[in-house]
Image 1 (cartoon, rainbow, N blue to C red):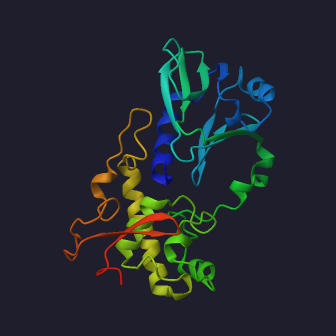
Image 2: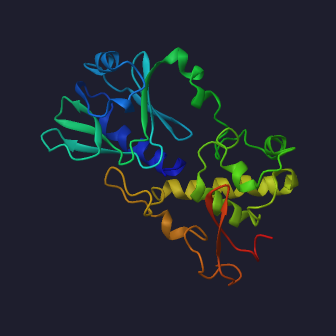
Length: 272
C-alpha cells in the first residue's frame, strides 16, 4: 500500500509534469472508481487545468479553479504518464488527456482507488479529510497531543498508530519501522505509553518519514513503482519484511506476528 512517502513522491513528480496544461479529454473506463456524477466529472475537468497538487495524509488533491479532484490510491493504485497515442492497457481505469499529447493514467489492479470532485469550500466536509490526524512532520505533533490520544486506549500501539485520525499518513511499513527505532514493543497498550516514549515515537516518525521521502518511498512486492520512479527506502528497512534476519542492533532474529490482522515485524530483544 502506498504510504505518506510514496504519495508525497507522486505529488512532487506530477507537479512538475501536469500543472497548467489544458485537459482535452477524460476517459473513464471503470465508472465505480468515480464518486461524483460522471457527466459533471467530465464536464468540469474538460477544458480546465490543474493549478496545484496538494496532499493531506494519503489523499492527493488536484487543485482546479473552484474544485479539488480528490484521489486516494488505497491498496495498489498508481499514476502513470504516457503519450496519448499509446495503447490503453489492462487496469488503466481513468485517463486524463492533456493538450500536449500526454495522458495521466490511473492504474489499479484491485480497483479499490477512488476519485471525487469537491468544491473547495466543501473540502472539510469530506469524511476522510476532516478526520485526518496530524502528519509526522507537523510541528503541532507533540508528546502531549499523543498522550491525549493514547489515554484509555487498551489496543496495541501498533494498531493505534495505524489510525489515520491520530497520525496521518503512517501505514504498516512505517509503523513497524517507527516502533523498532523507538524501541517500543508493538503489542504494548496505548495507555501504557509514557510521555518520553511519545517523544521517541515523534522523533522516530520524523526521521524515518523524512528519509523515506528523500529516497522516493519504499518499493516492495505489494507496492511497485509509480511514474517510473523506484523508491529506495526499502534498502533502509530495519525490520519490515525481514523475518528471521538478524537484528541490526542486537543480532537476535526479527519476528513476524499478526497484530489486528496486520503483519508486524519486530525484535523481541530491542522492543520489550
